[in-house]
Image (cartoon, rainbow, N blue to C red; front, side, top):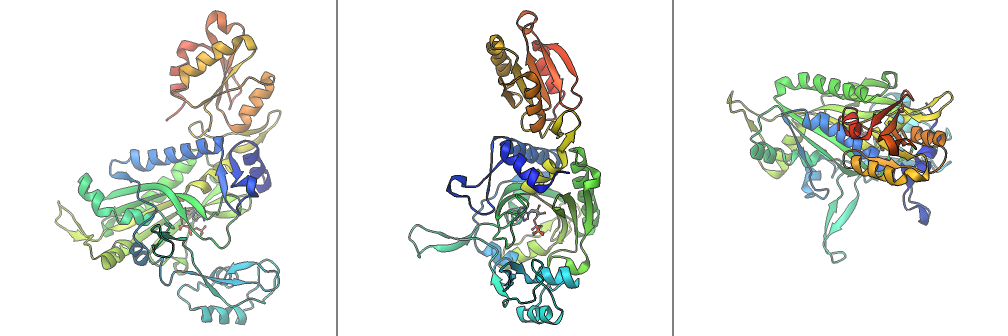
Amino acid sequence: MKTMEEIVNYCKENGFLFPGSQIYGGLANAWDYGPLGIELKKNIQEAWWKKFVQEHEENYGLDAAILMNPNVWVASGHVGGFSDPLMDCKDCKTRHRADHLIEEQAKVNPAGWSFEKMEKFIKDNGIKCPNCGSTNFSEIKEFQLMFKTQQGVVSGEGSEIYLRPETAQGIFVNFKNVVRSMRAKLPMGIAQVGKAFRNEITPGNFIFRTREFEQMELEFFCNPCEANKWYEYWKETCMNWLLFYGINKDYVVFRDHEPTELSHYSSGTADIEFKFPFGQSELWGIANRTDYDLNAHMKVSKEDLTYHDPITNEKYVPYVIEPSLGLNRMLLAFICNALVNIEDRGDVLMIHPDLAPIKICILPLQKQQIDFAHDVYKKIANKFVCSFETSGNIGKRYKRQDLIGTPYCVTIDFDSLEDNMVTIRDRNTTEQIRISIDELENYFEDKFNF
Ligand code: ATP
């Protein structure tokens, strides 16, 4: 696998990602998606939607607002008692999460501890700054995870609201709406893709951890007695999806959370971790959230969110199985996974054709074929994302397309104008075949799933 530095340079050089607000010197840990990055991101999102919504008759999509009634965050536990314990190393001036250091260095989960208890434990157990080894820490301060803003135009008079830190709550508050409007029966899933915002203490590793990111979450509502079955089902479905899209099976592992490590709402969580160049880290979290969230919303909103099974007449608060994936993290994993060096060819992005940012590149060999090539482009560009490349010799042009992962190149040469035939070059095999332009569309339709 390439190093992180090589991956970052690759993304910047080839139009995948740019530093946010670059002409103003940037904004720390903010990244903008360039022309290829946005295509790749859209494709990952589409591939996920296809598997987790479209292919499951019991699942539905949703697009909830980012700004929500602040009581949502009271119910979810994000407001009130849900801030992270933060402290500074007085020697090297780096900032750390006290609970993470305790967990990493003493293998003890301090969930629910007071700040005083953590401070004492850190002193008594010689917890060190991971950066410089010092034990000279500031006191622990509360850290607000959520971005706060104001609703209302007059400064100081508006009400305080938050940018959502996860998409899941938008789904829970719409559970009843979806059941009612879609006449849905359980088990049933609601999926959403959207932005989330977290005032992360230690953002970094490129787009792995940023303050603004996108999540792809499915909340799958089921009868509590079937929760374990669905938990296993969704774990397997997530892993299979990764392998189908070409993730190397040696790069991904399931890691079950220890009972002491579980979130307050979870009775079981497994992360799929990916071996990123900077280390093995969480890519996808699959959790059994039990009936925690719906119960919490019932309590605060006073709305009845129990489900009445029309067949068995049973009434219950559904359990929820949640596979939660970061779209940006997934994009980074796909690039780390696919960018390989091939002897005699250089770097090639061996990404699944469905995910490739550009599907087909049209290459007229000489100036005389440019008009013809534009016609070919127009013929297929309404079905496939195409690009047009005229500069450099053909070898260089193939190399450039290999580098960005374009699965097919269509070369138009002198003879094409006579016989209406073009050459298709396959990225994976470098094999070339010659076909009539009338067959192009059918040929490519077989090569992509969407
Ligand atoms: P981490 O332990 O890495 O902070 P988390 O356990 O807090 O992640 P969840 O709240 O379970 O993450 O969010 C679900 C998914 O959203 C994660 O598996 C990850 O892919 C993605 N995600 C979470 N935080 C970020 C972030 N700051 N930047 C990018 N992606 C994120």
